[in-house]
Length: 160
Image 1 (cartoon, one colour):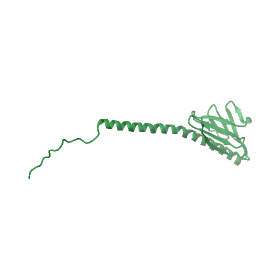
Image 2: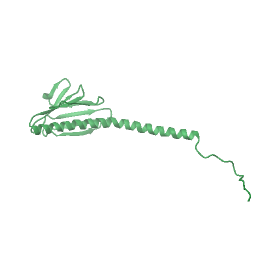
Image 3: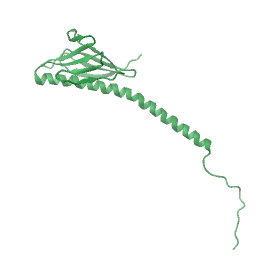
Image 4: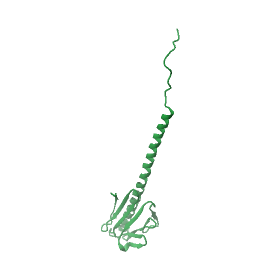
């Protein structure tokens, strides 16, 4: 048997060049950067939504307490401290500084500089009002019906 040698073309190395690898890495890095920006902007929206849900829950809790205990219960908002409390509880609930808080309530429930209450009565009614939370990306409002004391949460979008 005789060995046969191939006299073919020169062997070309198969693989990726350094330039191709760098281009792929740059594309991957740009993709991750875009995802990171998207996730961080979603955090602001989630934060205000969570704060709005917490306040709506506190208002519903206060109404339930008033009905069950047959005594007035209030939710006190401190606009200067960006916080609120529920009567008969010692805990102060803080709202993140990035969220602007405003409260519309009865004149008799304005208790001081930047403070106001939403009061719930033993029959389920309330002083009524509106709590608005707003940041750069979203706006949520909680409307409290004076007759039923029901708190309704809704998001609002500015067209401007």
